[in-house]
Every structure is written in structure tokens, then in C-alpha cells.
Amino acid sequence: MQNTDALIEVRAVAKTFAAEGKGTLTVLEDINIVIQPGEIVAVLGKSGCGKSTLLRIIGGLTQATQGEVRYRGQRVSRPQPGISMVFQSFALFPWLNVQQNVELGLEAQGVAPAERQRRASDVIEMIGLGGFESAYPKELSGGMRQRVGFARALVVNPDVLLMDEAFSALDVPTSETLRGDLLDLWLERQISTQAILMVSHNIEEALLMADRIVLLDANPGRVKAELPVTMKHPRDRDALVFRQMVERVYTAMTTAVVGAVAKLDAIGIGHRLPSVFVAQMEGVLDQIEQIEEAGSAELPELAEALHFEIDDLFPIVDVLELLDFAHVTGRAITLTRHGRAFVEADILRRKEIFGEHLLKRVPLAAHIRRVLDERPSQRAPEQRFLRELEDYLNEEEAERVLSVIIDWGRYAELFAYDYNAGILSTEDPGEEVES
Image 1 (spheres, rainbow, N blue to C red):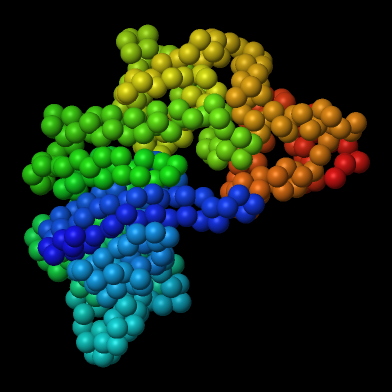
Image 2 (cartoon, rainbow, N blue to C red):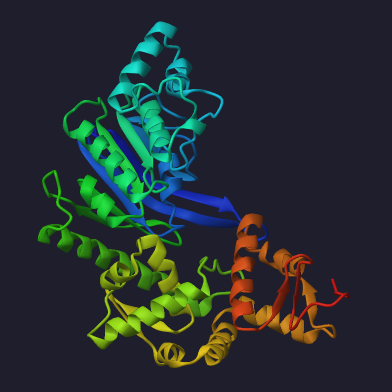
């Protein structure tokens, strides 16, 4: 049934992509979200849960495989005049100056030149870029370039403003200033926008702005929970109620981590290993041990101690559970006996423990080592393994996963890698390599 008051309705949206040799990969499944006038909604979730894909579907830039998106009751099948988007990467045309970049959307709508110039000048002044109309993107700081992105989105007077991690590419002071300025424009009704939908990986950022938080689970992306945020603006991040809300969101997010790793016993060589460095795993394990000495370690406390955001911590936790070095229950994370043995070991023993668990728990590592051991030369080209991974993953993802396992395998001294020749071996690669 249609919600006649809603600006945006996301109805049972699913998105799949072709996975070469393996049918399809489901990124989003049965997503249902309603956005009403007058609210800011934040979407939070782990990397790879489909947040940005969902935003592009809502904006008409990508088509859903199933389900539909409706804007003011009309189905969205292409970009809509009433919906604008601000991207993470600024997305400015370097050969156009600030004024010209901001006018682009108005030009596409057929607005007359004089009116385009007037409206662009007004929004440039409003967003804090007065005096920089003739400057080119290369002359501007990151924060100023993103202000141009906001100005370009706002100049068309959108009903709905979509923000795809719009502050994440900026340093902390700049992002806080720009976020505060945008929130002031919203609260003081200086912009005509009726609703804002923002994708973020930062819990505090979402809580500082949003009236409601939608949490996405991963693999595939589903709505895990919706949490109302009733605190009045301006919000104090040091206030008790704010800190309690941060922990509530963390609790909901960590249950998604537990659910995601519950199936790891059944993974195959094509599992999408997170891009995590061994040094990051060591740092987290060492920090868990330090916190545990004073009591139980909880994910919010761990993240704060490490100065991590969600997307920093959760992939590392996934890997530590995969390797059986740590275990998560609710918000609490504890070392397993293997994790404790790793933390207490010297560097050589750490390599041995890591290698043992890599072979036992990660099929791709065991497969690579088995192939090398079975060859008389004990060498093989990386392309041999890339071809196998591309039966499960697209080309770019296959290269990323192989890079991850090479990094882990080299640390554990399970195999060596010659970058220039693209050769994996049980020791330094020689001249002859079997294909």
C-alpha cells in the first residue's frame, strides 16, 4: 500500500551482480525503508554491506534487480529532478571553475543563463564559498571542494539530499565544520530540502545529525534494525545520553558481526577475505589483552582505545574470529586460547601460530600451499590462482583477495612472492615456472 505522505519509499529492493562462473552475487536483499518529510536518516553498516549501492538505487543511478523505489509516489527508474547526491570523492570537473561546476545541474534542467548565474551565486555564498567563484578545483582545499559538491547538489532545490559518506574524505576538523554548517542550514530552514538520507561509517557523525538510524547487516545487505534518535539539537557528544546511544548502536552493530562470522566454517577458496594487515590484527589482539587485564573487553571500549571507526574495527574482528584468535558475544570480545598464545609468543612463534591457523581456517591459503608443494619446482604464477578466484569473484575482487592472502602467507612464511615476476613459491622464486 502506498504511503501518500512519504518522500521516498524503498520497497523490497534487492540487487545482484553477475559473478563470473558462479551465477550472481546478492549485495542487497529485501530492503524496506520509508523517508518522511522533515527527517534526516542515516544508514550505517560494515564495508561491503551495500550502503552506497542502496543510495545509488534511490538516486536513480543504479537499477534494483528486484523491488522498487518511489519518490512522491512515482517509481524511480532514472535520476530525478527532486533528488540530489553529494559524493565522497568530490566529483568535480577540474576544467570548470566553482561557478561553472555549481551551474551544471541547472544547465541540465534548461534554466536560463542569467537565472543559473544568480542561483549559483546565491548558494555559493550560502555554503561559505563567496569570493571563490572563479577558482578551479585544484586551487581549493578538500573541504572547499566538498563545499562545491554541496553547493552543486543544493542549487537545484532538491526535496531529498543523498550523501554518500560526504565527510569521510576530509580531515576531522574540516569534516566537523562542514557537517555543522550543513546542519545549521537545515535547522534554520535556509535550504528547501525536505529530507536528507546519509550513508556513514561513523556512529558519532550519524548520531550528531540523524533523527533515525538504519543499520544494515552484510552478505547480503539487509535492514538489521531501525533506531530512533530523539535527542534535541545541538547534540553534545560528551553527554551521558549521547554516549549511551553510541553504545546502543555498537551493540546492534556487533550482533551483525557475530551473525556474519557464524558461517565461516563453511567458507571456500572464493571467500571474500577482508583487506586487513597482520599488523592491524596484532595491534587489536594486544589491545584486547591489555583491556582484559582490567576486566572484560568490549568493542566500544576497544574501538575508542584504538581510535577506530566501525569500518576500521569490524573487518579485523571478522578475521580474528575466522582464525580462531578471538570470539565476540554481544558487545564483548575475548581472546581464545590460540589468540592468547599468539599474544604471549615471540615474533617467530607468532609466525608459526599464524601459519598453522591460516592453513587450517582459510581454504585459499591451504590450496595455494598444496599446489606449490605438489609441484617439483614448488613455484606457480599468480595468474594460476587468479583464474580460479575469478570462478567465484569478479576480476577486481579476485585481485584484491589474492593480494590479501599473499600478505598473510608471506608473514607466516608459508610462501614467498616475487612481485616483479608475479610468482608464488615455497622459497625465493627461480627462473623456471610451471604454468
